[in-house]
Image (cartoon, rainbow, N blue to C red):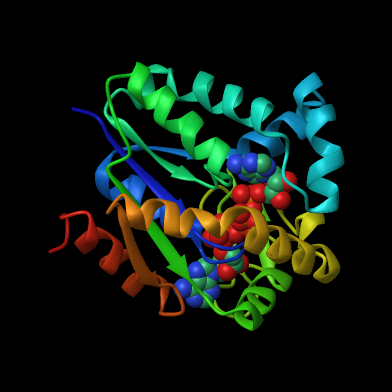
Length: 218
Ligand code: AP5
C-alpha cells in the first residue's frame, strides 16, 4: 500500500531540505506545493498568474486552486508508492481535501511530522536562504553555503534569493502560518498522526529523527 507523509511547520523550518533527503532515503515522490507554484510563476501559466498575487504578499493561495493542483499531482505515476507532502495541507479545508484525494487513491495520511523551530531562527535562516534555479536545491549562506558562491554544488546552476524571503514578507508568512496552518497541529494530534520533530538541530540529526519516526531509522 502507498505511504503518504506530511511535513508540517512554519516557513523556514526545513521542510524542503528534509523532504528532499527523505525522498532520497525512502524512494517516495517529493511534492512541494510552493515549488509547483513557483514553476507556474516561471512559466507564466494561468495558475501562475492567479497565484502570484498571493505569493508576493505572503498570503495563502485559495484552497480550491491548491487542492485541485495537488489532486492532479498525486494522480501521476511517480506517486504510485506514495509521496512526501511538503507545504500541503496548510488549512483545515486543505486537510479535508487531502483526505478525500487519498481516499479516492485508496490511501490515507500515514504520519505527519511537525518540524518545530523558534521564530527568530526562522528569520535568520530565510534571510540567508539561496535556491538553485534548475532544480530547487537549497542552501544557507551561513550554515550550509555552496562550495562556489552563487553556484549550485549539484547541477552548477545559478543560486537566487526568493522574492518572498524579504524580512517583511517572511514576518507576514509566519503570521499567516500561526493563524491558518498551526491549527493543523491539533487537528493531526487528535487523529494520533502527529510526531513533533526538534527542527533546530543540525540537518543530519533532523533527518535521522524523521526516519526513526517513520520506522526507517538505522
Ligand atoms: P513554500 O514554498 O511552501 O514556503 P514555506 O512553507 O513558507 O516554506 P519555506 O520553503 O520558506 O521553508 P522550508 O520549511 O521548506 O525551509 P527550507 O528547507 O527551505 O510556500 C511559498 C508560498 O506559496 C506561500 O507563502 C503561499 O503563498 C504559497 N503556497 C505554498 N503552498 C501552499 C498551500 N498549501 N496553500 C496555499 N498557498 C500555498 O529551509 C530554510 C533555510 O534554512 C534554508 O536556507 C536551509 O538551508 C536552512 N536550513 C534548513 N534546515 C536547517 C537546519 N537544521 N539548520 C540550519 N539551517 C537549516
